[in-house]
Image (cartoon, rainbow, N blue to C red):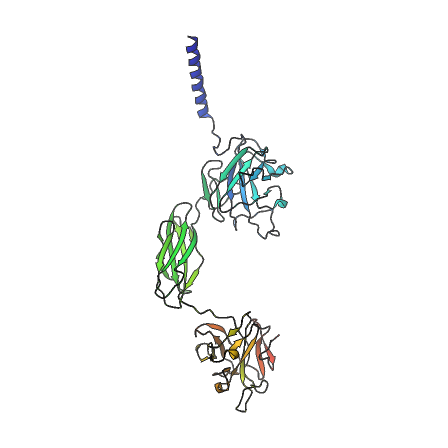
Length: 445
């Protein structure tokens, strides 16, 4: 009989205890069981321009946008975290210890928040940790002052730049992205909708011809899982008016465009939008079809359009050696042969006269060198004599690539004084000035 009574009392006690437990508040399950009601509540592991560190003036690493993590005190008493440890490695729980020199800064009030800057810049204050967060994903761990007991920890995946990740509501087990970070403040009423992210853009095939179909592949990810559209705009520069939908494949999106004309350059950009109207755009990219002409860097460096008696053409044979002239300057580190290029005095007629390709020794400009073309229409005197004459009253001068379309350098000048050149000073600069007598074939310095 005593045994039955004792068993009945035990059952009653268990029933009463279970009823009481149901009415008691439940501590956040993310807490590791240390008994300290602190939680890692929010963090930003890729902070490019979102949240400025108030202790950083930019003089050290030239950036005030540092990674950060926020600690939330879910308890009813103030807690000083001095002496505790914060780490990004579960294998090194004592990586960084919070200094105990300023309790006013390291104490978290009940229901309060404290931000620790993960920037490796401890000289900036007691809340600057000796590690940085990886945007590619890692761990964040808060450890008791014994260096062994984990108060809270979180392992995160790769993060979006300038987007924080945190608990919503504060202290809960529900983690989400925040469109507007709230370091040092509650995550309540903070927008959790963020714009899509476009990445991993690829262009195929590697060799593109006028018969090629071009495949553009890219990823468009939306943390809120409400991606509404993903499109490509493409076309020639300044006219990317063609639009097609990017089609989803196994792990990305792709679209086929083309074919395009030989030697054309096609520009494109991608746009992703979500259901709420947030939009992300890629940079404008381009690809070329076939072999596209890439011009060298050369300057029309000096010219004389009214040469009455100052500079003698050494090859003149008609008794009037004072001819107009144009000087070309090569500022590069490699020699450039201008044979096959065009010279014109009318930028509306780019192929007016082509420099002969018959003697590269005469048409090649050494690195840092100069070459003089005689604008005298006396081509019988050599390949550096061009089929134009310059007007002293003003006109155009253009140096055009071998494709007959690319203006390597060009200018429009006004009336010129006699026996005075007009030149870039210093060579290759945007500053022009008159030089009495001129310096053909030599530096204007």
